[in-house]
Length: 127
Image 1 (cartoon, helix red, strand yellow):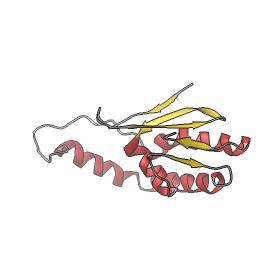
Image 2 (cartoon, one colour):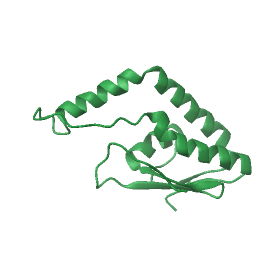
Image 3 (spheres, one colour):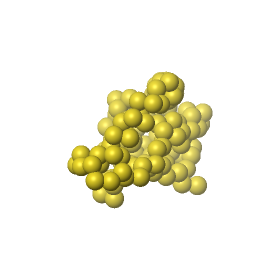
Image 4 (cartoon, rainbow, N blue to C red):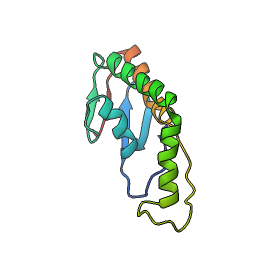
């Protein structure tokens, strides 16, 4: 099975593919992967989470998910502003936007991290 997390994105956006011997590949747009990897102080282009790093990485992602669930309105307002004004801030038309929460985006990677921790494998991307 291949997890692919999509949402608001442009065709020119790059994909990041996460790999582990413990789970199916997880793909997401670079802009969405960056939010998770910034939490973990990792480079979005290439990196590894070792089995020793996984417990702390999992805790950080879980904490960010919990925090994002406490403030869902702020994310919705930001998206609504972009939807009404577009990237060029023109007020021509309301662009349809499908919201995908941080928790939804992070879940497949979090599950990969949990499986990798359990089985003692690393999580890699960009290799």
